[in-house]
Length: 341
Image 1 (cartoon, rainbow, N blue to C red):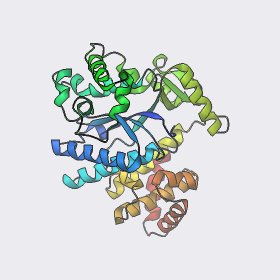
Image 2: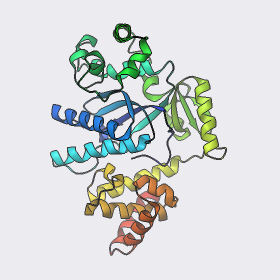
Image 3: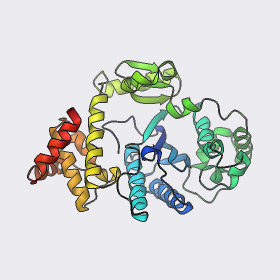
Image 4: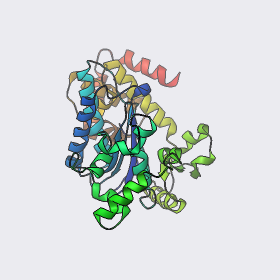
């Protein structure tokens, strides 16, 4: 589920990662992976998001995508919620499957897209799940197979990948395969996964120059690119936020705490809260979340609506309904104690 705001606009390139809760597996069988790949393809066709590269690992996924008119948050909500519901039903489990929220990094296409394609495709090799780069040509759970042997995943934007490597397909494939087999693919893994600039309430900071503590409170947005790219994005964000970036880290923590609490209390996947489901448990959990978000931390009605994937009026009515429940005092009191004590 997305936080209140992400960097996103048409033709933005994102490196997206989603992990299982407490690093638990999110795929238990080959059928689970096949189901997810099919779902990913359906989401591409339904939203117009262009998937450049992807990789399925036992407890996490990587996706490199370019958004279109549909924002990244809607695409990922559809993808992750669908998988979580399918997985929980298949294995008779309850609770949320993914680690709170997916992580996304805005990427500068020039000079970085081809590096990320390689990094994502080589994840199984690095994890010793695939013996070598040569074996990736027949490994079905990365988009490399569609580039090497097109036809399995026709929804993948194969042409966009190959355009990084020449002007005609024959020379593109030769250049791509040569690049994949260069022995430099373990360099700069942390930069490709975490970005190299953080934009936040203290301006632009270089990630590699900061320790882990302190950077998290500073960073609202992660960037992978050159400094002039990060500066341009920072100016755009400042303009969108009336000249400044607010530090929302504490508010984000409270939001995550509320959504995690109601998910656990009603025994539903975290992702279901923004799915629009009318299942009784989901509806009641959403009502509680609406009331708590509006009254315990005071976020705006419109922001609450975005978080829960409904209209502002639906949020208002949900909060009102929850305030009439017989158990509302005890639940809200317990939640309030957890948030502020």
